[in-house]
Amino acid sequence: MSATVPAAAPVSVLPDCCNLGVILRTLVAVNGAVMVAILAQAQTLGAAILSFIEASVLVELASLASLLILCAARKPLAHFPPWLQRPACMVVPASVTAVIIRFLATLNLYVVDPAGLAMIQGVVTAALLGTVLQHYFELRTRAFSPALAEARLQALQARIRPHFLFNSLNAVLSLIRTAPRQAEATLEDLAELFRALLRDARDLTTLEQELRLCEQYLSIEKIRLGERLQVEWELTNMSDEVLHSAQIPSLLLQPLLENAVHHGVEPAREPMLVQIHLSRWGDRLDIAVINPHHPDRSSPGNHMALDNIRERLALLYDVEAHLVTTIARGFFEVRLRFPYVKES
Image (cartoon, helix red, strand yellow):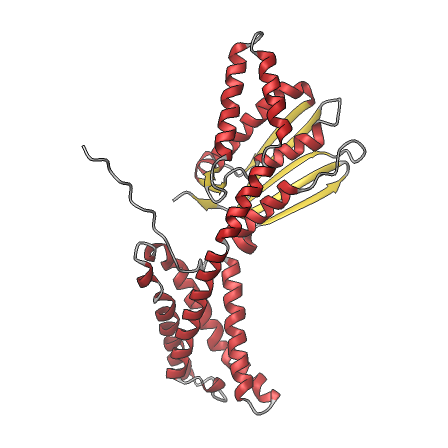
């Protein structure tokens, strides 16, 4: 019996026009190009400003409508070869621009011709800008591939500190004779944790799987720290369906918990509470990890894990993701905000 070869996942060379960063870069580039063309043709600055204001009606409508169409068409077009996908970024802006120019012409809105953008000129300009921007975003995606690989290497250094491995193994050794079943379960948790470490930094996992991994990590630390480690989970607007379908970067939360344990619990002799808050508001996920702050007893740290997570969020979500840290009233808080993406 011949083995079945799994079909390759669809690959899109079109920019993600649903992404806020792509939208902002596109609008800035298109408006900048139009402004340069107007300044090159206008005789005075006042005439240039007037032409740009009038042209902006066409420019903004065409740009936003084209982005909306390409946003909706990106997934269906991903099933076609790249050489058939790329022309979409030329055909869609050109067609949309032609329709809008014809519509605006019927309204007779313009006092002067906007930068000489007649029908043919407008369509050609839109097609050219669409082609250039598609090529730019495709090259930008390729250029970031080495950065993703480097981020993975940094993640492998920042995710699990060496002392955690040694302490965990020592904790297991102490349990082998007194509680062999617990020792076996701890080793299984440890193996699962390090299996997750070997995943590519670009891989996504479900929120449910990430939380299960974090619980395994905390159970290992609980053996070593005992009652000193207290954990409180709070979930808001997080149904089982959301936990099961929400896609997040793998090992996004675990390094934050490790930081919280290392800086908030280990330096103390009394019980310390680590709080994890997860919430969903519309199409956004919000994760906060709060731990006691001991400026006099804990080392400041090198922020490698936080910097790594911030870089991974920027690479995956561009300007739509944020990582913010605050210190207030004796607590250190890390808060993440990023888009709620469902598993396809």
